[in-house]
Image 1 (cartoon, rainbow, N blue to C red):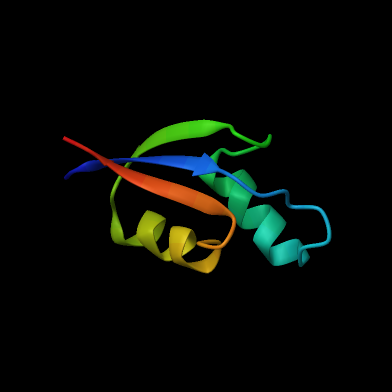
Image 2 (image 1 turned 60 degrees about the vertical axis):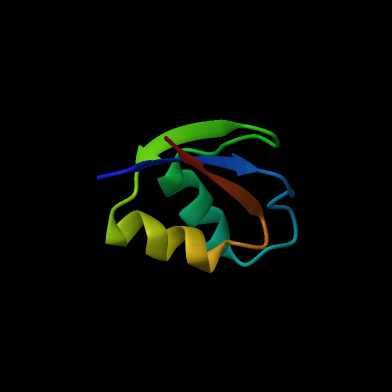
Length: 60
């Protein structure tokens, strides 16, 4: 599996509760926080749901 780096670039304030919980499940608690995770289908699905709040970079 490849790894991806997920960085939160927008605030979760005024977002639906579901999107806030998705960010927490990804391990993102603060603005500009980053997390390196395996690119599994489950993770990619969560990233897709909050794609407007995060930036994704692939790690070689």
